[in-house]
Every structure is written in C-alpha cells, then in structure tokens.
Image (cartoon, rainbow, N blue to C red; front, top):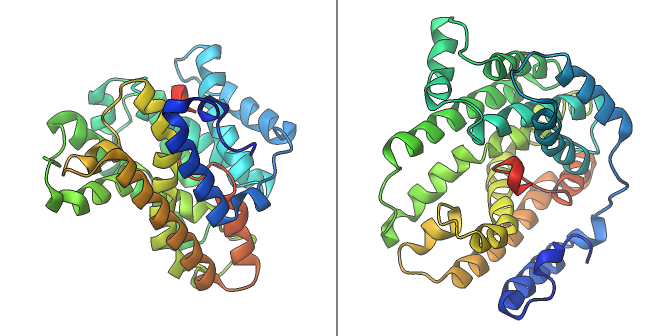
Length: 300
C-alpha cells in the first residue's frame, strides 16, 4: 500500500505496528479512496509567492521547508476544496508549524494570545502574519467555523505554553486518560482542521456538518498520532500521545490497538452522521489524506 510509510514496511521489529496500520487502512477503507497525483503547481506557486512576499526573519530554505508541510497537508487532505482555500490552509499550517517547532522564543509565543486581547503588536512577524491569516480565513468559512478556527488556534498556543512552562499535569494514572485526550485535542488543532473540510463556498450551512465535528476533532488528532508514532519511537521521543496514555500501565501496542479501534468507530460514525451527499464525500476525501497537523517540519 502506497500510503504506508516505507520506513515501516520491512523490519521484523516493526512488523506488529505495520500490521496494525494495515488493519486500520483496510477497516477504514482508506486505500480505496486514496489518490495522490503529485503537488498542485498552481497551489504551490501561489502559496510560495505569498510567503516569499512576507518579511518573516527566516531563510529561504527554512521558508520552503516549513511551507512544504503546509502544502502537503493542503493538497492531499483538502484537495476537494477550491485552490484558493488550499492556499490559505497551506499558509495557516506554515505559520502554526513554525510556532510549534520553536522557531521563535517561548516569550514571543506566550504573548501571542494576550497581545490579541490587548491590541498590541505581536513580538515576531510570523505571529503577526498568523493573526492576519486568521482574518483572511474568515472569507472562506461560515461565521461559526471561522470562530472555532480562531479559538482553537488560541487553544493551541495556550496548551503549548502550559506544557512548556509547567510540563503539563501528571498523566501517570489510569484515571488521567481523559486529561490526556483533553490536552491533545487542543495541541492537535483538530477543531480548526475539521472546520477546513467544509468551506462555505461548497457548504454554506454549518448545520449540514456540525454534528460530525466532535468526532472529526478526535479522528484528526488520533490519526496523526498513530501515523507519527513509529518515527517518534525510533527517535526515542517519549513526549507523545501514546506514551502519555501508556503511563497508566497499558502497553504501547495495546494503546495503539485501542487507537485503531477508536479511529474506525469515529470514521464510521462521522459518515453515518453526514449521510449520503457532498458533506460525506468531503470527509472521505479528507480522511484519505494525512489527517492532522504535523507536529514539526522534521516529522512531516
């Protein structure tokens, strides 16, 4: 299957994880829907022109590396949306990925939300451009979706600063699983990316898809964590969703199997909620791409 990373396709030690991923893809039907026709040059060129016209204080190599993350997400997961929407999603992801990857200081990030409410300039041009992008996105989504894109972006910054400043809360208990999920839904920006699935030019009424958003949030974050776990484990990273869920005593494979089961149930319920029509088709197109935000340019 082309969508299974090559790095986990032939190693005995990773065979259980590979089999688990195969099971997920087969049970969800993703291989039957997945299509990759390469990068859309029009979306790429428009996004690159916009990004290079900004004064972000980063090198051209950094700009192109981080923008590639946004472009891959926009073109693969949101290829069903108009090109102008894909460009904005690529730029939004570009800005958020740089914030998530510590391109700027913690103090600059910590001040992002407070300065919005105080009406003060942001401390880094990337953050200033992200704020402008949140305003631009309002042209492409319903008022409700536009609002949750903005509030979820602020949730992301708030949760990230809590984790960086205080190290998060103790998740080493079987009773802390709800907290692990709670904080992950915020750091994963799942609500914003769920809203991106249904732009207002295609879906002018929020009520036609809003009931699917709670499950879509979870699917986006869990799918990203499932697909990124192998690389994180190989790198010795322990600050991830699976590790926090296993802190209560569950094994990593048991946790991953539970995630697969949850994802299959979520996908089925979302499709049942949306019924037969354009809303469901948009979801299926999205879910066949890399559902969720990469945590850094190095992990993309």
